[in-house]
View 1 (tube, one colour):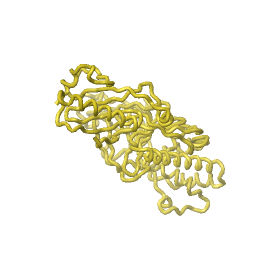
View 2: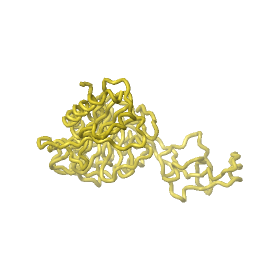
View 3: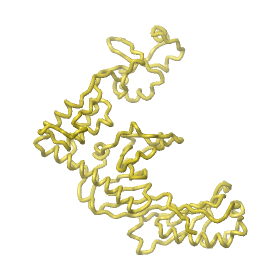
View 4: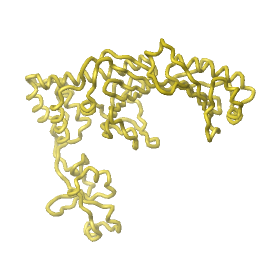
Length: 396
C-alpha cells in the first residue's frame, strides 16, 4: 500500500526567546483587499478561493472582533491568541498566534511551516520598524500630517455609528431638526448605534412617509451624520513621496485604506497606533517546529466493506486495536491504537494527553488515520494493513 497521502496537519512553532503583543498585533497586522475575493458559503463556513498570491492575509480575528473577511458566521474566537487566515503560493493556511508560539493548520510539510512562519516574522519585524521610525524619525510629524491631508476624500452621509454610506435609494426623513434614514430589518445597525440615535415609527408616521405596513416595529429611524470617504494618493502607486515624507511609514498607513472605508475610522487608527511602542520583544528567529496532528488518507484494495460485520467481530481479533462504541456504524467504523513516542521524536512532537491513533474505516474502502507524527502514522498504517489482511474474508 503506497497511496497514503497527508490531507490535514497541525504544527506548532515555539519561539525560544520571543513574546508577541497580541493586542497590538490584531490592531496593526495589515490585511489585503478582500473586496475581490471569490467566496462561497457552505453552512456557517465562508469558503475562499485561493487569490493566486502568497502571504495574502484576508482575515484576522481576536476576542470576538474581526478584521477583513468573516470566515465563520457563528464561531467565537480565541481570547488569548490572534487567528490569521493567510496563503502560501498554492495553499490556504490558518494560524493561531499566541504570545510565544504559532499553531499552523493547512501546511503539508515542515518546509511550508517555515515559509509561513517567515511571512509572519517578516511582517512583525516590519511593523516594529515602522513603530520605531514613528518614535524616532524627524520626518514623523510631516508624514502624519501629509497622510491625513492626502487621504481625505469626498464628503458622504452615513448611518451614525456605522460605516454604511447612505445612497439615493435610501429614504431620508427629517425629524426634530435631524436627518434620519428609514430602515427595515436593520438589526445589523442597531447594535452599533447609540440608543438616542434610533427612533421607532408608529403606523401613522409610516403612512405619512408613503409606507403602508401594519408592523411598524420592523422599522426604525436611524440618525445620519457626515463623514468622508478614503482617497488613495497617487504617490502610493508610484512611490514618489515628497522628500520630507518617510515613504515606509506613509505606505504602511495608506495601506489601511483597503480596510477603512471612512476617514474618521482611519484617523482613529492613526491615533491608536501612536500609542503603541512595540509589537514583540526578544528574538523570533530561533524557534522549534513540532507536529500536533497529521492525518493520512488512503484506500484499501477492497470494493466494499461490510461495516456491520466488521463491528460485530470478536474484540480479540483486533490485536492491539480498540474498536470504539458508536450508535451508528452504517457510515464508518472507528478504531484506536495506542502509540509510544520514542525518545528521538520527543523534540518534534507537541505532547498531548491522548496518545492514540484514530482510524476511520468507510464502506467503500477509504481510510483516514490520524496521529502526532508522520513516521508514527506510517507504522500504524502497516499494523492496520496486517489486521485487514487477517479479516478481509470476513468483512467483504
